[in-house]
Every structure is written in C-alpha cells, then in structure tokens.
Image (tube, rainbow, N blue to C red):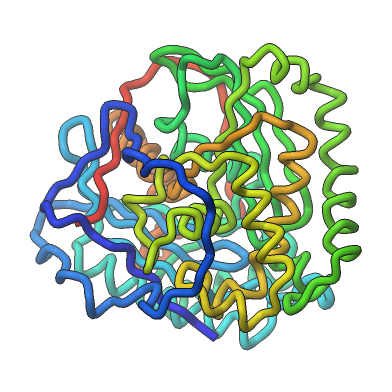
Length: 412
C-alpha cells in the first residue's frame, strides 16, 4: 500500500512561525482518540500550490525505511518559503531484517514515489538539491544496485548517509524549537529502521553542541515485523519496552542525564511519525495539520494514556483514526513502545513535537553551502552522470559555532 501525504496549508500565502520558529501550540486537554469520519489527508481539499517561476529553488529528499519525503523551498532573505511538500509511505525496508536485502516490490514502490519527486523538482526549476537515504540503505546488501537503478530511472542521485549525519541533519532541522531557558536537551528521532537520540548542550545564539549521541538498530518497521502489528499482547509490548531500555541504560550510565533532569535542566524534543501522530490524536484533529502539530507540547501522562489505548486496539480500530489511517496502524504501537522506554529512562515530564527534521536540515545546509560557495554536496539532482556523487557520503563533522538563525515558512 502506498499513501500520498500533502500537508495542509495556511490561508495566507506566506505564513511564518514565531521568532523561534515555533508554531503556537493549542491548549492542552485530556487526550481523546474517538474516531473521526473526516479523511486524514485529502489532496483535493487543498488549494493549488503556487505556480512555479524561473527563480532557483532548493530541494531536500529524505528516503527512510518507511517514508519518502520531499521538501521544495526558495530562499527568502533570512527565511525559507516552502513551495511544495510530498510524502509517501513506501516501506523500502519491508522484509529487510529477514533477508538483508531490499525486496523488488519495495524498490518498485519507492521508485514510483521518486518519479513523482523528480517531476516536482523539475516543475519547480530546482537548481540545487540533496537526496539522502538512511537505515534501510545502510543495511541492505543490494543498496548500490538500488541506488544505480534509481538514478537510471529517475535521474535522482541518492546518497546513503551515516547514522551520525542523519542525527545531525535532524537536529539542525528541528533546533529552532529548542527552549534556550534550559541548557540541556534530549532530541530523538524514531525512524522506520533505527532510532537516533542526541544529548545536547543548548547555547544562546549558537548551534546546540552535541555532547553524545546513539543510534539504536531498531525502528517502527523492524519492531513491527518482529513482534507484529495487529493486536499486541500486554507482555509483548512490555518486552519491547524492556529491550529498548537495555540499549538506553548504557547511554544513561555514560552521560548521567537523570541528574540533570532532577535539577530541572533538561528539555525533550521528538521528531518522528510516532510523536506527530500522538500529537494529532491528542489535539483531536479531524485530519492531520502540520501547523497545529509542529511545536506543540505533549505531557507524559497524555502520551501514556494514548499509548495504552492504542496498544489495546487491533489494526482496524487504530486505522479508523484519521491521524493514523491504514498506512500507520500497524506501526504506531511499536513507536509508542520505543517512546515509552525513552520516557521511563528520562522522566522529563513533557516533550515538544517537531514535524520537521532531516529535510529542513538539508535545506539549511544547502543554503549555507551556497552562501559560502560550496556546491559539492548539492549535486543529488544530477541528470548528467558526470555530476553524480558516490552513494556513500562522508561523515560530516558536528561542532558548535555561531550561525544565522533560519526560520522555515509553513507550506503555502
């Protein structure tokens, strides 16, 4: 099954976030997940995107284990104007844990989505882009064959990045949501095939400094394939949480994060389909709304209540909720289990939700590289084979330092 996702657009042509890049969160309320009849993602209900012009645009494509996501934007002084966005559930990593290879059906689904992305990039006259792949391609023995096939069929060059760079890009994309009144932060990204967690020192007017990070070899797709995605027994759910706890406990022992939590110095920021889904349910949205979800805050008690209810449901019951749908109904419980472990090990009390991450991080890097004259990392939309970079990118250094703050516009 493939599902196209087009986020809602504000009524204004160039809606912006506040000075910190934070959408104003809705008032907190008791979590409710009563099914709604309205569709979750209705492309026809959205206004048509702005017509392309000859102005150069940037594009960022994030090909994960579960989703293929594209963001097209135009630099606008100190900000970005988002021109177009696309997301499709492709499940590239389906069956990878059992076979060690990308399946033919998964590659075919993914390339179909990439054809759409390439067409959009041409339509918007994209001049500079970067397309990256993450855990599924890192693991697959036939990754290079898939990368070459993708290039031959779509003209897109996909770079398989390290888990370290994936965490770095996600952090760069969502860092405007960090609260500078707390000097430590846990930032996590629950993906389809892996989960990245960064431990940060938050600094005023500077890039957050990464103190440590970890990549867990598990995500919502891999756990669902191992433990199932229909009705999950209580003891199975507890076993998943305990398994994740074992991985996180070493990271906690090394960094003593709980001591900082007790001193009220730690904030938590989550960027993943799991947390955005929970936020949509918590807000009682009749259909997913990025402008409502991005920057919202979830209390742990609300997350626990929602997770418990979802874990007790079967696939069809979860699929009836518009913010879940059939494309995520089998995956969301595994995500809740990973999040439960994070909450248990680090009881911060609440988390801020980010519907942004790797794509926004790529856009920021493209703009800054362009300003400094660096174009070597931006050749992923290379119709000339001579411009095609290696699919395996080098690890990029992550260090603190001052830079201009970028604010991302919501989609038109």
